[in-house]
Length: 214
Image: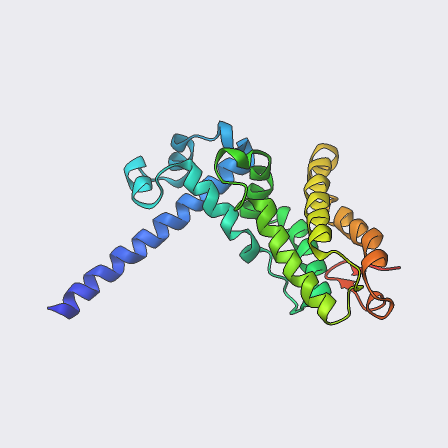
């Protein structure tokens, strides 16, 4: 009896997982196209091909959908080459810039940044999420003497997040974001000489973009 119940439960769980994934993808597409304020649950459920009742089983509202998309951002920009410390900070930001052009979830995250006060608190928002990730990388780099001892890693992390946010905004208006990766690499070329130790400066590379330091 228990085995038959388990067999019946498995397809239901698979369908539920599939519906949840379809809702998230549909929400990402709608948020990327229209932003948070203009997006509606009807547009999202129509795009996903599910009823609003099915949506409410997984998400209470579009705020919860937006929060989940923001929460997933770091997992979607993991660099293909393993790295740590300062090199990882470079890799993850440059990879993010490329993924904005390729992954609708990351594009939605970039679009949602502009309206995140409507669905997430300041302590959990995208800026804080990325700042914490970069601060961890830079703190490790500082302990390993890749980053100069006098560097304020928290302040630099905030600066990087602000610069990347501004870069994607300007890239959107000027090139539909096509040159965003180059803008992020340019940011690092300006920043690295100020924070990296001389020995480390010679070794930092940008995945897919070659040398960062010149």
